[in-house]
Length: 213
Image 1 (cartoon, rainbow, N blue to C red):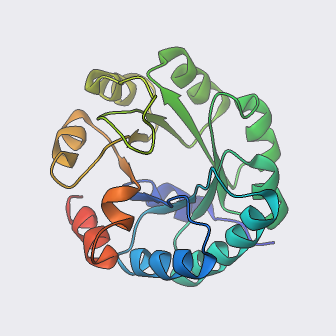
Image 2 (cartoon, rainbow, N blue to C red):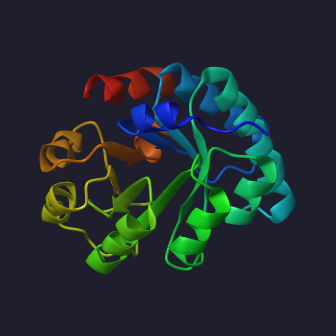
């Protein structure tokens, strides 16, 4: 089971954070992800809220192989157990996915732990205290993927950069048009689903995000 080196991890946490759409067709998903990986995102997260356990496991293993070949760190959304089972590079967890301290202990020092903090400052400080590798705020803009997420103010990103000393990801409704606003607030990572995966040319769209950095 390979592990992400600290150097790779530290150097990777700035840029496009590509997040997969809910896609039941594994062949189609892999084809789109291959295109996105050609655009060199900083991270790729597997997120599929509609798949059953068997499909999630199969898709996660296949995506991990693509990411390893491309040299892009691979993390799983909301599934610490599966991340550990397949030896993923890390996990991204929400408020219902268990205590952050327990996740940090389970993942060990070499793997990536990311936490969704919504607009909750106390969760951000908890993440920093337990050694999260990045924290994520959102939704920054109205989002089809997260329609019920409370809005997060840009000032929260700026405060986190000033006070917490770890990379900050911005999530929710991000596009190439509005991304500069989030970057100006201090975001290190732009977590994007639709604007990348639904693009006519996902590789070119991913590369355009990379150019923003």
